[in-house]
Image (cartoon, one colour):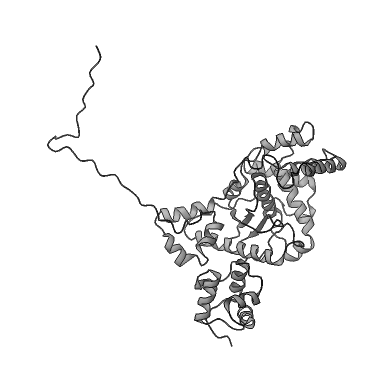
Length: 397
């Protein structure tokens, strides 16, 4: 028989622990000053913390008490990662917890704000993703551009496009170079959510990461966890091909490549805002350069020291999501909810968590809300009997 706080949800304790990068139950027990077996029983559901222990958990993990009494927003479908083999389990757990919180923030915001409708066409047309050939992906990329009416030139801002078509985008510091983004569909409203890394981010990388996760949302919505595990390499290659074809469409980009060289690709980077490395891969995918030429270009690329940072990377500011940011601003500015209300009633994580995931400036919740200042009504001059008299200027003779 469970004892302790009624309604305590064990999964939420594991989620909060992972969100704070506390790698094990024994580590949390050491921080709390309790026996490891106590935390184990809390997480497996055989017992629940009493009111005093719940307060200790709340303060240590920086969440409200209600956090442990509300169901998790963990998506039922798998989350798409670039790599599972070389990524630490603790890093994956952290990113999963942050994605859950992005879903939760999005869900709560939609109590007050209607987000754009999800506008993702059915690109599979009843086919299985494994049936798609490279030519199919090239066609899909061009069709998507026409469907969303963005033309066939450079895509100026992938994040803005994703939010316009109803995808919720958040950003966090991943803490590892092994992960650039995550994609999952919400359980409650069937809406894609994308979480992008801020680590050492530059504009071209943000563009490709956003396009890559968009490809997962379009192509791999019905993939099971088992399929993702067994076919991860194929799924990732397919997402990258569609992302590249979307950012560098076959109908226009190849005709601007006069002579494939690092110098020419650098010039194209300034226009298309896609990394030189991604362009090399794109030229190879389109059979515009043989594999030997591709390897030579990669070697020269590495010799120039561009692996860690390419020229022009710092020329453009990194695009930030605006959808959740603007929605929360609207909720507060309209007087629907105060910032204090949002933190004490709606959100159960800390202010810093919401600010980070919703791309709000640090300290947004603690800053005072703006006051509406009205001008004093105009008063008539006493005894004038009129609003005013027009006095003409004398003309110069």
